[in-house]
Structure formats: structure tokens, C-alpha cells
Amino acid sequence: MQNKYKVAALLAGLLSLNVPCALAEDNFGMWLVNFGRAKEVKPVTSEQYRSECGECHFAYPPGLLPEQSWQKLLTAEALKDHFGDNAEMDKQTLEAIRSYAFENSAEKSWYKRSRKIAKSVADGEAPLRITEVRYIKRTHQDIPEKMIKGNKDVKSQSFCNKCHTQAAKGIFDEDTVQIPNYPDWED
Amino acid sequence: MKFDMRLFGIAGSVLLAILSGAAHADAAPDMLSSTAIYTQDSKSYLLASNDTGVVAGQNASAGGLTTTAVQPAEYEPPLFSGSNAHKYLGLSTLALVALTAVTAPEEDEGTTPSTTSKTQGTHQSLGRLTAAMAAATVTTGLLSHWDDFAWEDGLTDPDNLHVLLGTAGALLMLNAVSKAPGNGHPGTGIAGGAAMAVAIKLTW
Image (cartoon, rainbow over all chains, first blue to last red; front, top):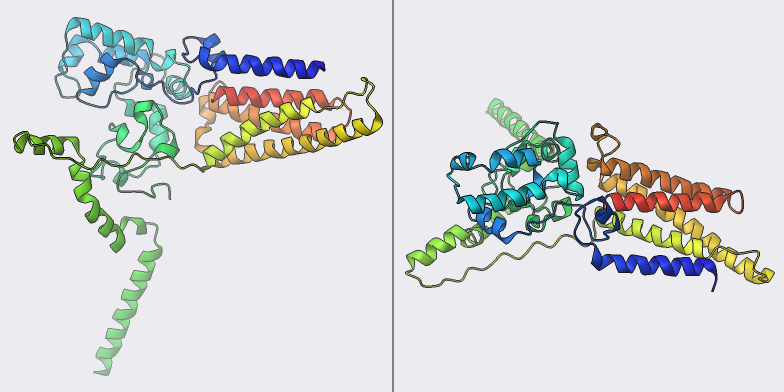
């Protein structure tokens, strides 16, 4: 067998071994050898986070905001007035939610869209709304108001999952967007 | 009477002009066509009945009597899109780079001239196909992901790096094909393939 075939077979073997063994992206090394797709945002994996936050609104993946934002949002004091609602929770639950959000915040993720979000936030800046993040603003700037605020089935950009049909899976690409009442929104 | 008819004609012409102008105006999509109104009205009951709050309310008011709501069909992303075309072209290019490398003729292993010539032909064809695929990948990427590219994000932005490395990879492959055979084209081709592989990994 020629050397080049041996090398090719070895590389193919290594590639196939990598697929199941590196699905989590904890660090650069893991990301490098991870052949699972990580181009979007890491979906919510904590059942507690999903149920606690999802009780009132879409459980936003923590990778949509940097850690400093979660630090401001997830305090007992801040949750008393969580965008106009009381979202208080017991100390233990809050601690678990905080830890999960911090560990999976935008700047700690190797998912591409989270990295772009983290890069677009200036040092010391802590946007409290996802819609205030510069990257999110830029990617939505061309969408006419009538399709969001003026759309009775959307009303606000905060309801990501109204248009991003696979938001729960952490997928926010254009192919998965379907704006209610505007099937031809791209035209 | 004659004057009235002329006025009537002028008014009619102005009205037609306004209507035709409105049909071509940029703001035309704001105006709901009759079919759009029909679609909205005909589906409004579906939107209402599928709203969780509404269904919950109905159940409560019915004293626990379960009413089944028709769930909206899950949105299926299009199978063929610019984004998908770019993805599959990129992956195919990488596969072709590997095939081209594997089919490179080895002149020092005692192969007969005819075998070498046949292998060289395959290698040459694959090389050209790879370069063409690389060019198509870059073109579809520019067309379908133009919005993802923003200089203000700097060179470390994954999408910016993807564009630069992908384009460099394609150019290196084209260069390798143009200077083959010999002239160090294998190194250039492999470098092109490696650049494209890193570009893909960055945004995978």
C-alpha cells in the first residue's frame, strides 16, 4: 500500500473517531477536534433553566448575552422588577440559574454566533436586552417595522421564536426564519 | 356638456396614472392585495386556536372539557438554498482536494508510462474540477452570506476569517492548476486545501 493511501486512511479513521467523542465545546482544544456543528448558539441544556425561565417567556440561550449582562439581570434585586414583572425565585434556584447562565454566556462559548455577539459588545458594556446587542441590532436592521412591531403575531423582537422557528435548538440562521403573515419576507 | 366630458376624462386619466404609479411604487407591498387579505382572514382562526393562551382559556371555560386544537405544521427550512449550496460545494471541494492528492502520479515507483499517463489524466481532471468547485463555493458564499461579512468586526471575526481563508484557498487552488504540472504545484494545491479546511472549521 502506498504511503499516501496509508496517510489518507489514518486521517479518515481519526476523523470518524472524532464525531461522537467531542460534542461538547468546553475549550479551544475541544472545539478544534469537535466536528459537530457549532455555527449557531448552544441550545439550552439545563432543564431547570428551561422550566424556570420558560415559564414566562422563551428560555433564551445564555450564549445570546455576555456574562456581565447575566450578572446584572440575575440578581434577587433585579428579578423583583424583571422588565416590569416580578420574577423572584428561591435562593438555591437562582444560584443554579446564575451558574448555568454564566458558564454558557456568549464570551465563554465557542459557538460562532455567540462569539460574534461577544465580540460586538464593548468591554464593560452590559446590554440588558438581547435586542440591544450591537450584532443583533445589525442583523435585524433591514427588517421593516411592520413585520415586527406592526405584526400582530410578532409584536416585538424580544419574541425571537415567533420568527426563528428553530430558536429552541439554538438555530437562528436565515433559512429557518418564517415571519408570521409575511411568507415572502425576503423579497 | 362637452366641457364636463373633458373634465371627466382628465379625472379618469389622473386616477389611472395614480393607480399604475402605486402598482410600481416601492411602497406597493404595504398595500394588501385581495389575495393577501383572503389568506389572512381565512387563516386567522388557525392562529387563534393554536395560541396556547387561547386554548388554555377555552379548556378552562369548557369546565375541563378537552378541545383539540390543530397544531401548526413545523416549519421546514428549504432543502435548496444559497446557504446550503455554499455548504455542500465547500465540503465537496474538500473531498475533491483529498481525491486529487490521492490520485497524484508517483513517478518514482516504477509505473509504466501508460499507467502514469492515465493517473495523470485523472489527477489533472480532478484538479481542474476542484479549482472550479472552489471558485463556485466562493461565489455562492459571497452571494448568500454577504450580510455576515463586516469589516468593523475585525480580522478575528470568524466570518471575516472564513471569507479571507476561503478566498485565499480557492485562489491557491486555481494557481496550482494553472502552473501544473511541476513548478511546485502540489504544495500550492495542498496549501489551498488546508486554507479552505480551516475556513470551513471556523464557521462550522
